[in-house]
Length: 417
Image (tube, rainbow, N blue to C red; front, side, top):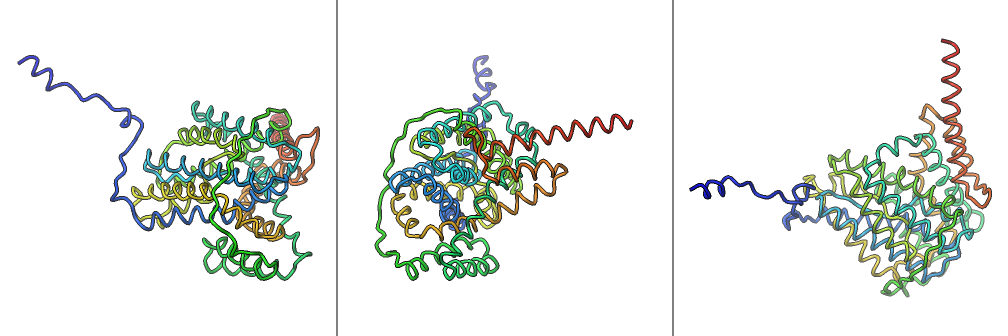
């Protein structure tokens, strides 16, 4: 009797999955709207941010095969992390590559070797993992003055956005037509504007430039492994600005979108997983994987599914389509390289209009607008000193002005008192 009583009163052993919030997915959660939202998120990523990545590859003199490896790395890293995180937490977590970070590559051009880029990517990924493990994400973001981070982001994107108009002199008809298409589609169906623009650009390329669109065939990716070199110049010119842009331009707004949609998942596991897959992708040339701030709304919003508990399927679908895109990265690259450089620059610049507006508005609305403007000016200038790029110097100037202004203001108020 005693042993029976003891047995009946024994509590079940707590499971690790219960402690960390794992909930088993169900087949009944799958819906066409969620799968469509995930597919659309991937299409928008390939129609916009990937064109910026292609511009970076051209600026750095990267060939077709190497760029195919880049696309494979960022697609598979984003896909696997999206699938894993969305299934584990049953939250629509859409991962992607750092779009603002790719603009940094354009500004750096050929100043860094591929091995130095890999070293910078690995360093950023390691720091992201440490931030996730330590749980200091919120405090770290709060430490950086918002005016400075917004000024740096606006400066990076604006400096590249100026190049969007460069093709007007060489082919005003094609550029003017694409701008008209973008203006109309942005009003009629804003969520699909970049898809319409990409389709129009391919059509114009076939008509105006005799691009052989019909010759594109199924082609697998061709991954190429690159060794890592850690240099001071790469750490300051690429790694540090990339870390700041990834935290402030990807994770911070991405987490805001998730929380605004009613999902309270912690940023820590997302940072850890994003950092780990970024290390693997770095050796294939892939830039840092992060929470997707641009496409997150497709998966987390009510258009994905009216029931928030079933929207995680959109994050899983997004990951699956990213993996398929990575597998056929050769075909994706073949399609993109059909576009003339002038059209690529225009499409990439137009894809950045909303982010430029967002960060510029936030910078100008800040109480510390002077520091933000100076950060913006130095970053957008493209100035390089001691072999270190403009983004680093913009942050240095902005932070110095921010704290100097605070010190002088405090001294002034103390004197008056």
